[in-house]
Amino acid sequence: MSTPGTTAHPRFTEALRELGIKDIEVRGFPDATRTAVEAAAAVGCELSQIVKSLIFEADGVPVLVLMDGASRVDVELVRRELCAAKVGRANADRVRETTGYAIGGVPPFGHRTKTRVIADRGLLAHGEVWAAAGTPHTVFAMDPRTLVGHAGATVADVREQSA
Image (cartoon, rainbow, N blue to C red; front, side):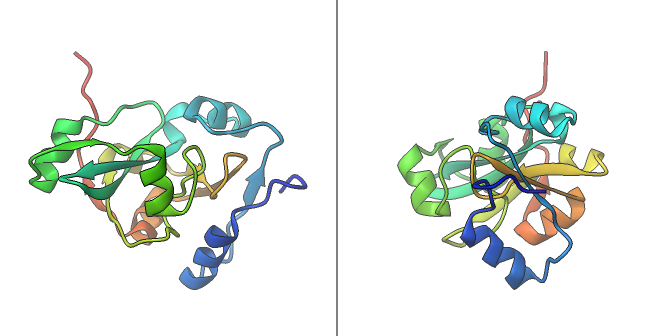
């Protein structure tokens, strides 16, 4: 189901074709699904079923972290996973330069550049997760193991633990 004017980004559509993915329904919404909360409300799913695609810089090199919508990335755990000296969030320009997408619409795969990807293990707890389809108005659902595979992600524990 797609709302007129809210179709997937062409680069993402091309990535689906290149990966041989044919059975994905992209859902478009007239209102933005830029945040995990907005996306979960629009889709009608649990917040933890939303996949946040977040770009960080590890020693100046972009890395994509896939995190569930209810959790936060523990930058120190990412730093350790990558054996990096310093890890921090990338700015909006770096996100667009690396992925080809604006913040709020970054999908887990189909990026402009080849980037290392880490997926938090918590994503695998769901039967289905929802991620951006290249725009702040479009999302798609996929089995998390399949999504992690298409993203070429390494699975690791990188979420902040509550006290």
